[in-house]
Image (cartoon, rainbow, N blue to C red):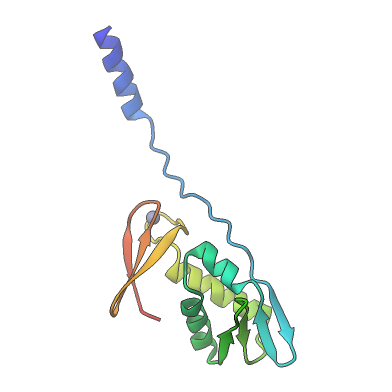
Length: 135
Ligand SMILES: [Zn+2]
């Protein structure tokens, strides 16, 4: 009986650990052009899913676009110039890769910690911490 238990224990020890990063459903950006402006309708909603402050993500996009913009009360991100959907999506993907994705396990379930000038992406799946450049 004791041996059997030991055998079982050993068997469980050998089972491969499942380390698939949990998939995060990132909604695609709802981008519309209004006159000479570009509106991202579901901006706050998407940032909430990513656990990122809309302000931070907006700052990144505006800096990369060299554009001006603001977030209105309903969470719509308004860029004060016409930017193609494709440009925004590729910039947003770059934001995800740099400021959301865990460099260790590939999970998008991470949080951004700021300690003054030091920014760290902490993975909620594997616990890895990656320093990133402040935005
Ligand atoms: Zn990770």
